[in-house]
Image (cartoon, rainbow, N blue to C red; front, side, top):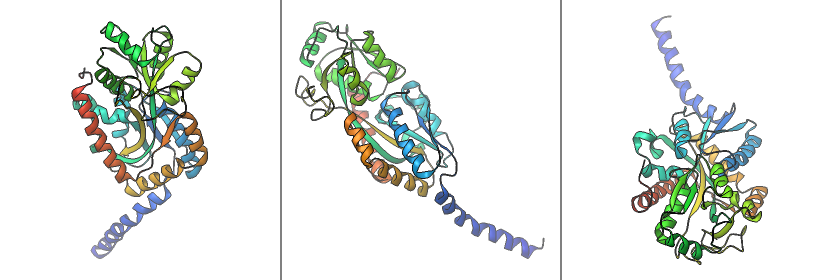
Length: 326
């Protein structure tokens, strides 16, 4: 090839690059997408990921496959997502577990920084929590449970789905605000923690309303209080913690989607629009209302600001209230 033809060929190749990028985003997704859930099957993140995944599959015509990668309080699955190619074919269903872990889990153990290694796509929903005890516990109200705990410092315990999870952080905040000493018993996932309190292995748990409400209805556990500003529409007979023993106490679990940093912005925007449309569907709104979950809608930029604020919030909680990192 002559020098002139080589120059022309290289020029043509360079000109083709910016044209190819938007075309790939326009065609996205061209193959199955996996949603990494760093929590166990059956919990709010897993259930919500499958609900959203099914809608995205309907819209895009490609499978959105949920992959549960549990362990280390959500760290293992988050590492898996953060280290994946930034091509839009790996997403992370995350929660306030990830924002709390930024200060609770040392960087050497995490091997990632949330806002450095992952890009915000969209929040999905949030739910109030419910404080429950095993029926054998001699307390029918939150005030009675606090009095019982004060009479037996360090003797009662509470379950969570792992260090740094919203249930753990809610428990530590509850301990401090109520002035009681409870032993934290971390399980590998929320399903095992739930089984722990239902079986009586542990006395208390703070869990998401959508997940624990059926067990309350079936009287497998006794609900003492919910953790929102107002009573839950799912458990309307259960008072709030704020009104029945711990003034000012409030805790929730929220869920959202992120992708490896460097994922093309057109793909991020396309996913954000699809998720925001999905959570407004009448069937999803009706389903989540019945379960006690409330949709959250933001742009990627708004979600970025929300995440950074939540990291600061939980850093303060960890500093004042939470267990020391192991």
